[in-house]
Image (cartoon, rainbow over all chains, first blue to last red; front, top):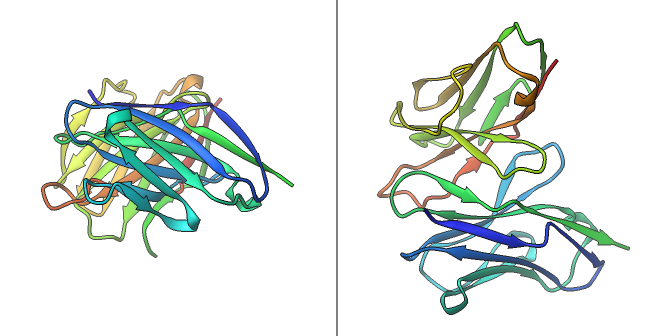
Length: 113
Length: 115
């Protein structure tokens, strides 16, 4: 089964600094990859998705991610962190067949003034 | 209403109670999902319905019973739960393959506490 690994359960950045959240996937076929964000006491909101089109994917709120097949990675970045970016971020991979979205354990992003 | 809605948002129940969680999607999707989100654990897929038929059941205890009366509504019936069942229960929907883009849209969740 396809899976994702998120390196770092907690990441802390200063306001205005670069945000980098890491995600590596395991897959024997081209995957569909997603980043979701979860704010406290809310559900998951889709930030962006990779579906085998452009390898650099732009999402909402200034986030983007690059699909690198050679590194089996799909890291999430944002050039300048904002206080409102503090949340839990989940990377997920979709199997080519079936219905499962396999989620990573999540990375909690803290943004300090 | 837009997107995916869930009611109630919070639920406290005793181990002998029977309750139901409700999910409704307003996106015209034809697949719906229940997930369990516990502290310090990855999201766990519980049930999947596609075109109102259950297509996956990931070894979920029988004290959880799903129901999908139509493509817009999904229920999770609860009975004789255990304290370890306390969690955030998330509902999601998607457009089924092959035309779908695989992305799932989530509701806000029901925070369940079992005493």
